[in-house]
Image (tube, rainbow over all chains, first blue to last red; front, side, top):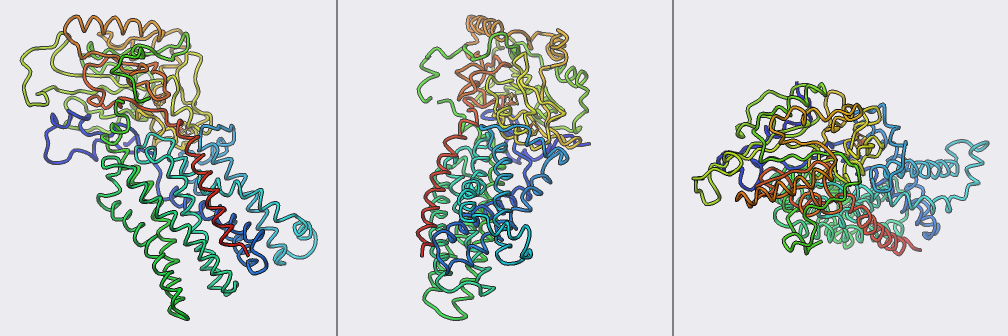
Length: 336
Length: 281
Ligand code: SF4
Ligand code: SF4
C-alpha cells in the first residue's frame, strides 16, 4: 500500500554511474525537497482565474474610458469574468486532500501566506464579479425588469468596477507569488518575474477571448476590435520579454527543465506558437482584408489561448522537475 | 547576506531559538545506522509501513522523509574520495560510513508554518512545529514551502504529516521516542540552548581528535540561514551538507512574498496603463 504521493527513489537511478559516484555531490541524486502535488486542476485554475480577473479589468476600463463603442466589450468582459470565476473555487476544492474542509481556509487571514491571501482574494473578487455580471444582466433585461433587477440597475456599476479591479488584478497575478514563496528552485529563483508573467499572459488571454467572442457574435464594431488587438499586442510583447527574462534568469542548472525533454519543447512552443506566432499573424492580418484576415486572427487567437494554458502547465511542471533535481536545490542554497 | 560564513562573523554556533525551546541534537558521528529511531517513531506514532522495496542506496531502503516516515536514516559509504583514492585510515569516531538520522528541523522561522493557509500548523509551547490534524485540509502548500523537504501529504487521509517532536510525550514530560530509543545518544533531546553548547564542545573535541571536518548544521551560519534563524533540531556533520541531502544555505521562502507582490503590483500598474491607453476613446 502506498502511503505517500510518490516514492521518490523509484523514479531516480539512471543507468551509468555507480551509487558511490552519485553519493559525492548529492544524496544518490535524490530530490532534496518535496514538490507539490498540483495537477491539471491547479493549472486550469491559474488559467481561468487569470482570464477572469483580467477580463474584469478590461470591462471596467472599457466602461470607464471606452465610450459607447466599447459598451459591448464591457458587457462581454463582465459576463466572461463571471463565467470563468465560477469553476475556480470548485477546482481548488477538488484539489484539496480533504475537500469537505475547504472552509478551513477562511479560519484565518495570513499576510505572509499567498495561499491564504488567495483564498480571501478569490472570495472578494467573486462577489465583485458576480455583482457586476448581475448588474449587466439587469441592464440587458435578462433577469426581468422589476424587483431586484431594478435595484441592480441602480447600482453604480462604474464604481463597483473600479473597486473590483484591485481584487481582479490580484487574482490574475497572485498565483505567481504563490509559486515564488516556496522552496522550488525554478519558482523562487524567478520570484520577481512570475507574477508579472502570469499577469501579462492573463491579460492577453482575456483580451483574446473577448476579441474572439465579440468577433464571432458580431457584437462590436471594427474600432472596438482594433483597440482590443492593440492591447493584445502590448500584453503579448510584455509576455515575450518576461518569458525570455525568465529563461535567462534561471541559469543553466535551475533552468534545465525549460530546455530539456517534453517540457523544453512545450516552453519553446509557448514562446514560438503562443506568443511570437500570434504577433506575426496579427501583423499579417492587418495588411489583408476579408476572410483571410479573419482566418489569420482566429488562428492567432486560438494560439494565444492555447499558449496561455500551456504556459501555466510548463511553469508548474517544470517547477516540479526542478524540485526533483537536488543540484537545482543546492545551487539555490549554495553557501554564500 | 553575501559576505559571511567563511569569514567567521560570529554566526557559527548561534541560533535565534526562543528561550526554553526544546529540540534535538543529532550527532552523526555517533550514529551506527541501527534505525532504532525510525522504528521507535513508527511504533509510538502508529505510522504504517512504507512501500517495501530495495533502493540500492547503501543500507537506506527508506529513501526519504514522508507522510509516514518522520525519521529517516541516510547512509553514505565512503568508498573512495573525489580522486578515487580508497581510505587507508579509519576516522576517529567510526568507520568510513556517514550516517545521519534526518528529521523535521522545527525551524525557528518555519516555511511550512508561514505557508499554511488554515492555521493547522502551529508553534507549540515547546517551540516545536506541529500540524494539527483536525484543521489541515490537505491543500499541500506546506509541502513545497519547507526548504528541507519534510512534510508530505498522505494518500490515506489526504492530510499533511510530519514529525511532531512527540508533542504528546513532551506534554507528559517524556523525551521523544527516537531520542529515547537511540542506543548511542546520537539523538539527544533537550533545551536548544544547552544542546547548542554541547554541540560546540563536541565539535571542538572532534577537531582536537583530528576530525577537522566536523561542524554544526542548523545554526545561523549553515542550515539555519536566510531568515530561518536556526534549526531547533540540528546536527553535527562531517561532510558537506549536500552529501546528506541537506541544503547548505536555505532561505525562508516567505522572504519572497513582499518583493514578489511589489513586482506584481508594478506590472499591474503598467499593464493597467497600457490597457487604459489602448482602450481609450
Ligand atoms: S523542517 Fe520543514 S517541516 Fe520542519 S519546521 Fe522547518 S519548514 Fe517546517
Ligand atoms: S496541507 Fe494542511 S498543514 Fe499543510 S499547508 Fe495545507 S492546511 Fe496547512
